[in-house]
Image (cartoon, rainbow, N blue to C red):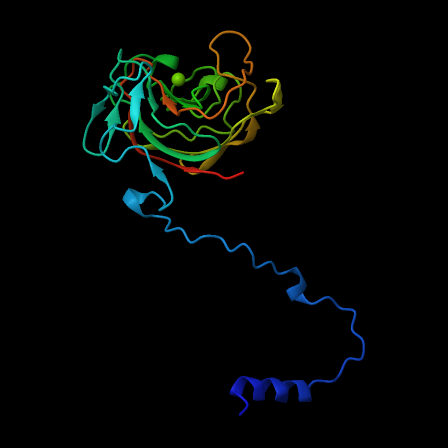
Length: 246
Ligand code: MG
């Protein structure tokens, strides 16, 4: 017994004029069905995608100081804050290519200016700094302001809002590749959106961030994510990342 679909198809075919020899490509020829992208709930745990690694879910257990001791930064209700003098903190886990989400806010009490105001930093693989700085009405050198790749790339625009408001960084980082003999095969790249505004457009990182002199690469593998203690009580929240496959 023919199905309704079959009947309709047969009816349509019969009603269409026959084409003897068509060389026209069919749209199906350029359809690719495999692989099928995995389904990911985009706003799952605390707003992070379901496949994200949440690095702050209310405590700093995912973090440690340089010497391996527990992170001593201050933890509040849904945020944590640099305690000046305790030193940088870094993740216990190490990562390669990642999509990283970080929110931060500069102190509302304005102390200092230029590089001394709301300074911290997001160091990919402990080496490559996306600058955190209160750049709201606070001039400093352009390649050292908020969302700069410190001393390497000036942000395309300044999307900083007032101290006390949350700044959102969405960062796409591709780690550098090194040949077996340690020479650089491909530099790291960074794309940064600051408060949803593109500020770094797939820029090539020139090497490890340095304060003085020219950056250079040293061969390394996966490494931790590091947040900087620059003596300012900068707050962070909603830190999560997704590991990117090759
Ligand atoms: Mg910094």
